[in-house]
Structures are given as structure tokens and as C-alpha cells.
Image 1: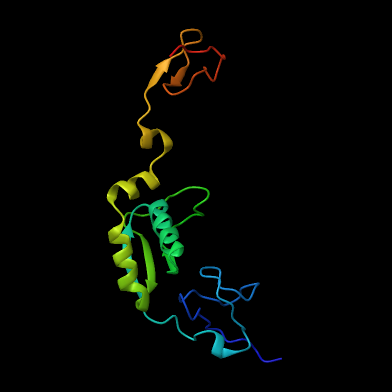
Image 2: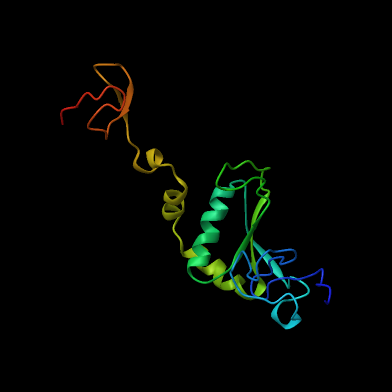
Length: 158
């Protein structure tokens, strides 16, 4: 059996394909054959950082927005799984795209309004600016948009 090359990068997004358990890029899902060098690149190709931020959640929101229009992107500098928490060094998180996707990615991200970007990363309370009140029965803090106290079940009148 021929040994696998040590340098394998996705032909579309430049993601490192070495030692993957499947024959698909985990980033853009392009199929490759580790035994056929014509299905991958031996170098990642020119990649360009298009966003630098302190917030890995925001970087993943933008990565997913780009994926929706068919532009594969990589997030680097996030120190922990995005499903668990977002702890990063200041300005360490970057969003990278292949050079050939740079202008389209920048144009698309620029077209997103700051309101859309803020709403996408805001918590539900921040997004709707819901106030809070004390339940008259148990003195628990309850969001103003609740019709019933979550703690004791007291119904609130409109």
C-alpha cells in the first residue's frame, strides 16, 4: 500500500485533510481520495483573513452566513469548541477564506447590516430588550413577557 501524503489540503477551502477518518472535507464537505493527489492540494493555497475579532461566536455566525451562499470559510484562534463556550485572546479569532472567494465574501459580509449582525449574536433578552418584574406571590424575578411566574405559577394580568 502506498503511504499517504503528509500534506493534504481541500481543493476548495484549503482545510487540512491529513488524518481524517472520512473522505470528505469537514469544512466544505468536498469529497477527496487520499490515494489520488488530483483530488486535493499539497498546499492550502492562498488563504486570506477577512475578519479578525475577539468573539468566536460572531466569527462562527459569519462563517455560517458565508456557507449559506456557498463560500467555505475557516475559523482560527477559537480556543474551545463553539458549542461549549467562547474563551479567546483579544483579537485572536480570524475568519479565513480562499483568495478566490475573498471579494465575494467581503462584499456579502459588507451587505449585512450591523443590526442583522447584532441580532444574530444577541441573547434573546438583549434582542427584544425584555424588562423584568418581581412576582407578587414569591418575589422571584420574572421577565415581563411571561404570563405566568416560572417559579410559583402565579398568573399575571395583562
